[in-house]
Structures are given as structure tokens and as C-alpha cells.
Image (cartoon, rainbow, N blue to C red; front, side, top):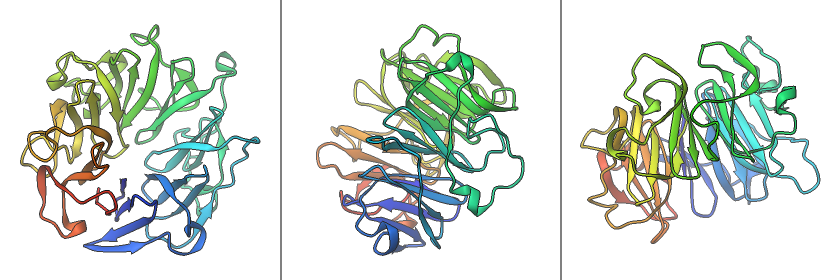
Length: 349
């Protein structure tokens, strides 16, 4: 897996070892210190910090260029553990097995969802203190099963299949407590969430994908306008009304949708999309990632979106195929999925 940052690129090998790179140099992070012997299963990155979730459910945070690694002290119940992490531009949110969410970092738009807003620049000390998501009376007892961070806000899917959102709202104001999203998704059973920049997405149990907010990540061919209610994405572009199986997103990268027929489609602001010979491009509507070459006949398990390089994990050999800028591994830049560097190799994003 990989994760993009403004300053460097991170990757995790099949064994769970973490590396970062600049130029074509790989530097191990997890050989010594708190990460020694840990198997990192998930990575998330914001503008200044990295977060890693290990196989035991523990979360670690460190600087993009590592200085100090901190094990996050989460106030969990017996048997509860962290199962998923996501990031915004300046915060992290952690989902637990009990459906709770804890956030750290900057809270200038209410990204913590605990009723508070802090408009001052966050400090290193507060970057690593967890704050639990709180619910207004109307949402008392809510538990979550999926979360995704945009640039300054977070969207979540509840265990009963509803969408909630907190942080930067569609109106450009801070929303420090979660609110339920209504409209076309009200009577749908939602299964997963996605976000990219100020675009928010939700996938339902029948493969229908909805988006709201603003930006090219909506996939609705809307540029410069705000979409206030969830709108169906499936009729647009190359998806062509077909159902979606999985949704992949990252706050700074494009959105990818894996359809039930196995094809991959992408849209959003500037990123490595793999749709043509351009290394980095953009699209306001879904466009088909090229699967005529290296990905032909392959079954995609996961996609790791990136502003500069994206990658896909393949079922047949669990190898990672990448496209975009290749400087990180001293390879030529490629616009379409071309290279596999194996299941145990570090790749860029």
C-alpha cells in the first residue's frame, strides 16, 4: 500500500514494513523504535503527519520526515480496537470495532465532530491527543462502519446504512457536530463512504453511488458549483449506469470506482488516473482506467489513489501495479498501468 504527502512518498511492503522515499532513495521507518516488529496494515497521511494502523489495532503517528513516533493513546473498552483510519488536510480520524470515532490534529472546521472548533494552528502536542466524536440528541446511539476524510471534513456511514457528515459543510461553514445527510439516499442502505477534496460520496447496497459537495470529485460534470443534495453518479461518463462494487478515495487524490463487472473508473482533480498517456490528468466525470495492457484479465482487490502515482493490488498474485510518476523507484513515468513491481516491493504514490 502507499500514501502520498506534499513532501515525500510512503509505502508498506507485504510484511508490513514502512518506508518513505525522496528521489529514488528508500528509507526504512519501522526497523527501530516503536514500529520495530510491527505489521502496519493501513497508512494515512495529512499535510504534516503520517498515521499507521498495525495488525493489533494500535495507531502510531509521526512526522512526514520522521523525528518522533507516538503510539496514540485511545480510551478503548475491553476488546475494542482501531480498525480503520482516514485523514483530512490536517487531521486524522480513527474508526473502532465498536463503531466509535476518535480524531487528532487540527480542528479548524470541526473535523473532530465533538462540538468544538479551534481556529488557531494546531501544535505538535494536540496533534496526538484523541478526541471522541459526539452526537447531537437526534443521533444518540449512532455507531459507524465506514469513514472517509475530505480536505476539511469527514463523511461516515452508520451501522444502519445512513450517511452523516461533520467538519467543513457544503455551505463553507464549520459543522462541529455530525449531521445526517438526506435526499436521494434517505431510503437507501449505504455500505461505504468516500471523499476527495470537498466532494463526498456514499455507495449503497445495490451498487448505486451518490455524491454531494463541490469539486471534480463529485463525478457529475459540475465545475465551480456546489451540489447540496446527494446525486446519482452512475449515469455519468464511463460508468454508464452500471453498478459499483467498491469505492476508493483519498483526500488529495482522484476517486476510483471498481464496478461489479471488474472494470476500473476514475475522476476528480489532478491525479494519476491511468486513463491515457498523460502522467497526471483530471476529469469531471468517470473515465475508464486503461485495463488493456498490464491489468488485462486481472482481478483488482484494492486501489490506492494518488496525486502523483496510483496503484492497484491484484488478486492473482497480490502484486501492485502502478501508474504515474516513477521517479520514486527510478522508473520512467507512465500514464497507463504498465508495471508490476511485486507484492513485496515499495511503490510510490
